[in-house]
Length: 248
Ligand SMILES: Nc1ncnc2c1ncn2[C@@H]1O[C@H](COP(=O)(O)OP(=O)(O)OP(=O)(O)O)[C@@H](O)[C@H]1O
Ligand SMILES: [Mg+2]
Image 1 (tube, rainbow, N blue to C red):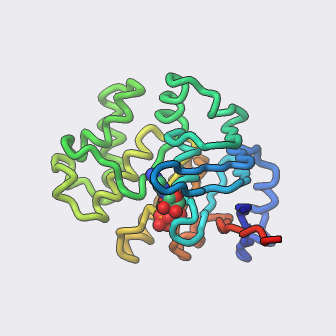
Image 2: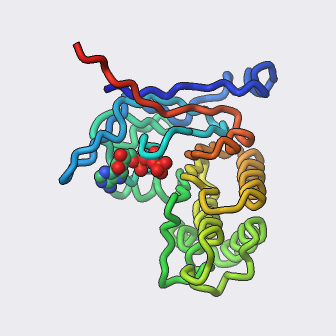
């Protein structure tokens, strides 16, 4: 089995300066021949040789049908899942060779992962959840407060700061997950179905603001989504697909 990322060109950028500019940008993520096999009662090949290159500051969406491996791919890039085979270079560093300390540092400072299933600490308030990644990198209190205010206003969740996540709706919890990923202003944001539980109107606000924030800070944004609308806010769309090898 071979896995390919089929690149669908977006017409809106095909003749623009932005595309030729992106050709000149340096590469921030370089993935080669990434394979991941989940072992257990059933063995599942989730990634079967993925190659992907992402430029610094680029915004791209990875699409593909359910179960094709989008979450697995993002989790490998985020350094929370060790692939079975392959290479992942981030800023020319092989992250699969990092030791535990380097990996913890990488997860805190370099990548912000927006989980498809939120991954919020239920025993902490919304405010404490968003503050946590900033405490890990020893951000001073005043700066933490300012960042929490800025993020929760932009995501329209300020009124829930003292609330526990279990009392929030799915869409509100998803926005808390986005705030956590953005808290340390990492150079790479990996967004796994960031609008999966949000209505169309709120999704538009989230995508617009996420994309806008990434442009301001020159953040690289990789979105995994079923939603065809997601490509409206990105420069590039790639489709994760699988080619079954022909039986001889
Ligand atoms: N922890 C796990 N253990 C075993 N198999 C898994 C595990 N996580 C995912 N898989 C399998 O790996 C494959 C890829 O799953 P993944 O979650 O990456 O897909 P996806 O493209 O994100 O799907 P969706 O669009 O539904 O979120 C699926 O066949 C799934 O059943
Ligand atoms: Mg998924």
